[in-house]
Image 1 (cartoon, one colour):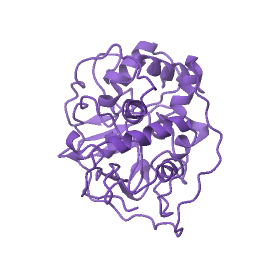
Image 2: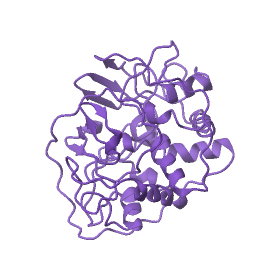
Image 3: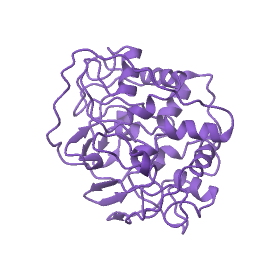
Image 4: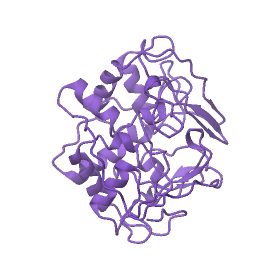
Length: 334
């Protein structure tokens, strides 16, 4: 969780310079994020020499289930991708399994310096002394135990629509991870932190019977993908540009490069209109574009690779359904 002592987005957010990610929720727009626009991108690593997209590797999928703990394990370790921000990264971009969910990833913007919180069950530096309802309130409403609010960049506007079943399953699973004592520095903000709209206390489940609607839910409240892939204008998310991309992220996770969120609308030139379903899913789960170019290690491809095929199919179905938008500020090249 990112904030002055509490919650940061489960994941990840998500995907950048040519990186595909899941799209976002088309329900009522989330509240504006007060983050400032990042400066121009720095030099980026050379593209891979491959000329064709490699096949998806055979990985062990994480089983989903109806019991709370199994379901929470599935969400946290796949679509929600909590560890992408809350687990320190190794030099190759992978997550450090010895420090899972212990926090300290930092995002610096002109108006804030935010640290991902320790969300292990450690009672002194993590969430071990928190009640379930306090954790849920922090995730969905961005509210700390003392009644004040966390700040960006955690995607509270999207998480407000996370269902009771899913958010409670996530909390149940976090209770079972290894407690790690890790004191994270406090986040600092030069902007007012006044909350994120009306407080949410209960959210119903989204049925899986409609793949587009369920994909919208996976890509929004659970995956918060559009928080990166919807264009920000003067630091405020513009829902008229849903999926348009073009947001710049400098030195994510401390890497010496910048990333730009891709256009994930069905536009045939700037977006995914010419991509096959298989190509989209391969990019999401392997980090390779359709022409074989290696994508930057900001999006948690390894986590998405373990997701159920039906969830990936729903995400793609949703991406196909959003309005096509061309000419993003920095559209990803296929």
